[in-house]
Length: 450
Ligand SMILES: *[C@@H]1O[C@H](CO)[C@@H](O)[C@H](O)[C@H]1NC(C)=O
Ligand SMILES: *[C@@H]1O[C@H](CO)[C@@H](O)[C@H](O)[C@H]1NC(C)=O
Image 1 (cartoon, helix red, strand yellow):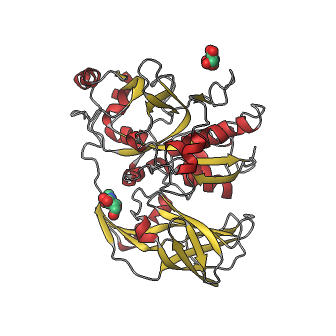
Image 2 (cartoon, rainbow, N blue to C red):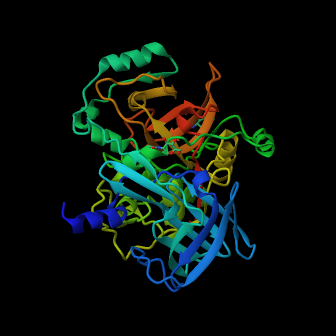
Image 3 (cartoon, rainbow, N blue to C red):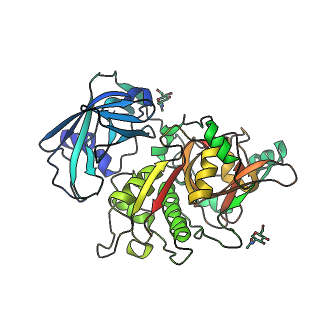
């Protein structure tokens, strides 16, 4: 490889849709940081590919569980953004940057004591600067091997024996064949189930609900479904992401769409454009994956989303083709359910769901999930030996909860983005209360401005 090309890939691969995020933990990031900012004169179009001259310097302590404190003692909040970076809100400004990493061959080296260049802006979103952060205490670099799927290019093979065994070992849910899977290769399946950028996320788990949440939870209805609240449906139609790892964009748009319907009593029913996110957002990895907190949340607040006709879905992330004449729609408020990353659980999710509307949630996808046709899903532990799929983190939309009348088994009702022919009309139900496939660990709530 030519040195210049290598250099370009090393330094700016993120903005050409890198698929290998950093892997930083709360423990890595907690502590004292120096924040560097350029002159605060930009707007949301600011280009922070290069940092530019540092004008502001600020000391910020990031404390347990979500308290940020500057050198004057002013307090704010912070959260990890999955294991990819962290967001800090303090003294009227909001800061976000991805944690730093380098990629050499198959090795990804996370340097969790510094960030890439990111963005800072004031709470009015008028006044922007480029920002990066450096931890005062240095941390040893952490290396992980990029494990590319060996069978990426192999075609998917029909495996009736696998489906039969899923249906034999349990009776809570039914597996079936989807003939269209044979038209896809294993890479398509990997993308459809979350994409490479999502693979590194495992480890998020639900926490115990606190006393107040448990108490408030007791006053909620036994079941809830935003598709039928006293006969009225507030959820937009199911879509199909195809074989681009854009689930996070579909889940994000679906959350905004449903909540606009709820806030306007169904008077406004926009359909928002995942393509604008996949093609244009610097807060995601395009067709290789991304995360709803950064899209339904930060992107929709900072840059805004557009309606489908302004950027019709192509399932490709090569360029940004959004019609610049289109108006943009914004998010007023966003947060991880529970208040910050790592504070999620069943009770907080039910409360946020019933109070505000559908939530974007994460879900670990195993081989058996691909064949879900109906019932209350749980992972059987069975693997498809013909078509082994690596564990990914899919993003979907939580719309309701209930319990099976006959068995009493509790479930969540969830909208997927694999078309209407998949599952129960494009939806699935999944076991509730046991953090099944980490579904109670990563919920995001947003409040759009209708
Ligand atoms: C990411 O970091 C966590 C905690 O240090 C570790 O358990 C996990 O295995 C790492 N992931 C990868 C893919 O190396
Ligand atoms: C909505 O729920 C009510 C009460 O559970 C039920 O009677 C009705 O058939 C449902 N409507 C639709 C469209 O599913």
